[in-house]
Image 1: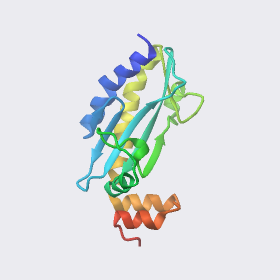
Image 2: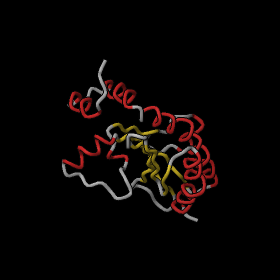
Image 3: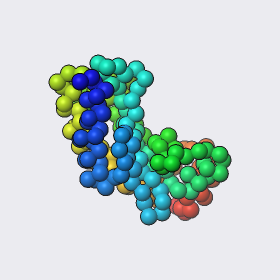
Length: 174
């Protein structure tokens, strides 16, 4: 079995079920939560073009895409996939990197990528990643699906069109 086959099995058999148990929907590398206001919280695992049969490099991208942001993008001509927004469509995005010393052997040369080798050590990536996503990523996304929390986070990023975004989200700035 190649590293890519093992990676796909990891998504199907370990990561996907863990995220669905945590309340997310989706499969094949993209899962999402939807708030009552129609905002999306997204976890997306993206593979690198540098991946091979022997090693798959992937990143874990978290995103929040508020409904008014998606509507604004659609009005500007951005086409959304029928399956819903991707991480790249999010107003807030963050890469969840493998900083933990426990994951050191899975680090790729670029710290924003995870490495999934075609060897016995690869078996530990799935459960560790699933735990990290469920214990860190999902709570962070749930927190930022509260628009007040999202605005607080976005304020720290000093976005150029800050006033327009805050007005779009309808959250008073205090």
